[in-house]
Length: 116
Image (spheres, helix red, strand yellow):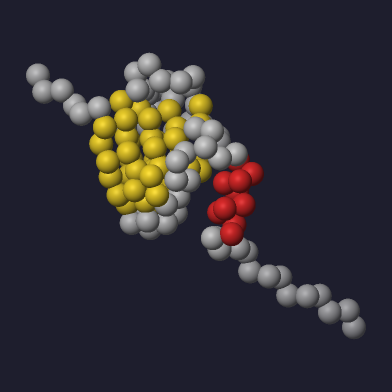
């Protein structure tokens, strides 16, 4: 029986998606770009910037979405960190600031009300 590699690298162009059938014991590492990760049945989404990683013990499918061109790695981690632990390279606030500073689309400004 052939054994799967312990690490697989991949790239996604902007706005591309990759569906992973089962995220259990798999670590997703963002090398470059910004990844939006959605786990089936989980109300929380995860944003990964370069250096961030995510691993879970939950058996569920996931969607990896490239907010910009992405280079990433999938690592086999059967004995990985606690379920749902996100790499601590950057805090949530720092990731949010970084995303906003890159000019993510913002809602159009509402026209000013004119009182007559």
